[in-house]
Amino acid sequence: MTNHMPTRLRRSVSIRNLVRETRLAKENLVMPLFFKEGKGVEPIESMPGIGKMSQDALLKEVEKLQKAGIKSILLFGSTSCKDADGTLSYDEKSPFHTTLRAIRKASDMVIIADVCLCAYTDHGHCGVLTAGPKNRRIDNAKTLETFAKVAVSYAKAGVDMVAPSAMADGQVKALRTALDKNGCSQTLIMSYAVKYASSFYGPFRDIYDSSPEFGDRKTYQMDPGNKREALREALLDVKEGADIIMVKPALTYLDIISAVREKVNVPVAAYNVSGEYSMIKAAGLKGWLDEKSAALEILTSIKRAGADMIITYWAKEAAAWI
Image 1: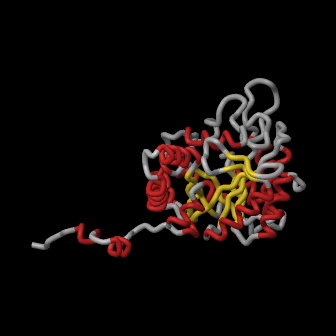
Image 2: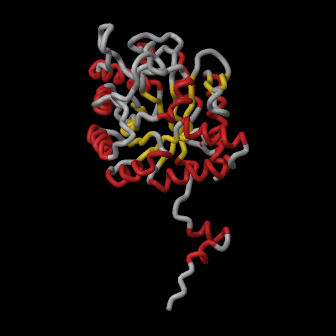
Image 3: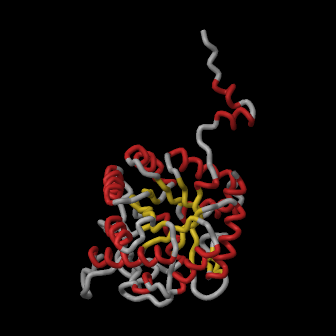
């Protein structure tokens, strides 16, 4: 009778490393960065270690990330001059666009820019709203027109990739068409194809005071109970021309990451969101658990589920830990 002893493969660090099935790599980590007007850094209380950064601070941070071995960043724009239609989101003379050009000039980073309006609209919703004081909702057609302008403006500023995050129907097709028509056919699209209406976005919404003025985002973000719908959304976006499909959040949707990975033939990204980061940070600061081991366990689980790339606020720290 064969003596089966799986523990033989675990008896030393060297053997465990030799047979490890899932490995994290710096090259697969993306650091989210938040722009602010003015100068310096504004700490985000609900996200220890993370802050909103002006152009000068972002340039310094990008340099630090490069030295740490992180090669990709996801940038979020904003403005203090919000309006109903988020018009500054596609103004090529805006401070954020100027910052994009400065980072492009100074760095060979893979630059990804989030395409959404929640940090630009005075109502806090992710798109342009229908007219009238009552029963207002997202005007999908007008929202797509605006997103197309934003994507082209970012591409002209030098980004490598645009990432539509509003879950508007047809957003990938609208962006791909506009980019191709404007000589930006090499610009990639990473679609937030599977974005759930999650409670784990709380700290992020504090960053730009972008909670909706009325209602919520459940009419356009996905119901957490739905899995088949996630596959439909992902396949639709691949058909429309998405180069990368994202699942967001990551930790509570590992099964969705796995299911999407099995169905699509493009790279899959997962967003390890603000709430997932903050709860571990808080527990670590309290001494309730070891932040490093917990963070690496979470990131490994996301990779094991099938994510080719992970957007995470631990990117710089994880680069040193891996």
